[in-house]
Length: 140
Image (cartoon, rainbow, N blue to C red; front, side, top):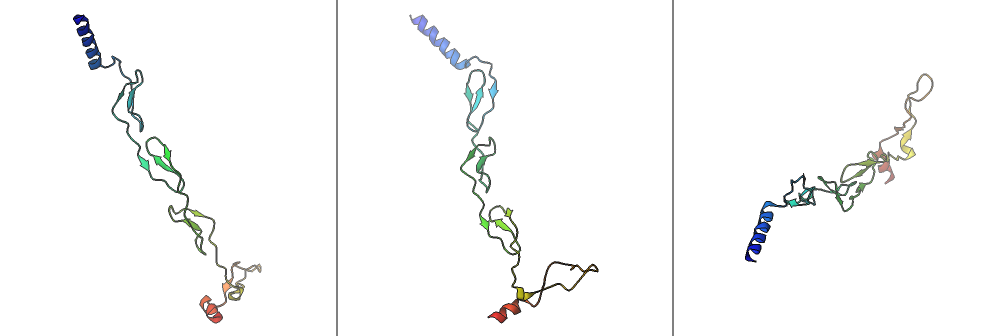
């Protein structure tokens, strides 16, 4: 009986030291799984871990290695359009729409003086009749 126990112990130690005896075909480690043998499933090492890129206005937090996402996109933080600039995102600089343009009172405007030979105005824009500051000063 003692010989059988010793023989069994030797066989067990040999298999532990020699591994599974498989000629491993390793699949690379991923963000969530360690390096793994395709044949026997044995693993080696640790998972790589995610390389998170911060969320943006249009994309959620994303792993640069595997593309996994977490959370939600931040969404744009719009600053209202002005006379000269369209609506603009404070975070990413994206724009949307058109500038508002100037909404001048009719008292400040007059028709253009320059006319083409065909009788059509050279520009469709109006000229300022007097300075804006003068107009507003007269109203206060």
